[in-house]
Length: 380
Image (cartoon, rainbow, N blue to C red; front, side, top):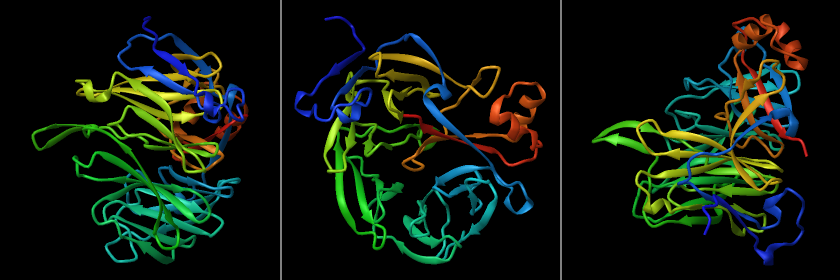
């Protein structure tokens, strides 16, 4: 058998409603050989297949921040500082003007010690703050007034929360019990925290994305275990060889299968899906060694090929590479974001390396301005 690193398996019973280039609707499974080294190179321009929106955040004294995006709504964008000082900033998405700064950091029943991630519910005008230190989700209105909290998960902690629909949140549960043999995902009520749906990914032996020397943690690698594409959720677990989609009908179906099995590899080579679009699947291959060496891969559905890629921002005239680190479920519209520091744009402007709307934005900046937020949306 030829050493082919990707094979398309067509699940004939699922070929209902098939649409060109949209693999999550036709049941195709991508199989990837992570033992393979050396890939063909592919250079792509972001604007060729994605729409881009830039937001120049208000840089007045009350709203100076580091611009780490927590949530994006139709009207509001929510950010915080990297340093976890408790400040949560609300900006107008269209104009970038500051709306409000909230800080409920503390040890009280109505406070959070860390705003690990946040869900914005514009319909109900609420913020859901995931405090992983206190293992609870605290709900505030958009003025920062406390409304309620959920803290009923005694044996495990909620690692990630996202907007499932108007009434529910979807969450990833982390359990330190390495003998459990499964990774759990739950859907809970926004009002009570009650679990209404539960599903899990099974595995033989727990694999960890950290390197330790005795009791000293040397390196830790974080990854997104929940992604969203169209009306499906994507679930992954480092100890499993399979990435699943979770449909609106609550079916769990394989999307990506890696080989050889993670259970047989030493050192382990992990595979993390990062972004799904109508044409591409962006994937990160990570080898568990001292510095967690990574390879950025892209699966092209149109060509049925896997490449190592370089992604460029077409609003730069000098081929500016895009770092895919700033990802996460922002809303059904926005796939990922990038934070562009003001001093970088000022420098690029002074050197004549900007064009289009980004050049116009840079004219009004100085090196101390807030970061510019680039929101990336599927074009098709």
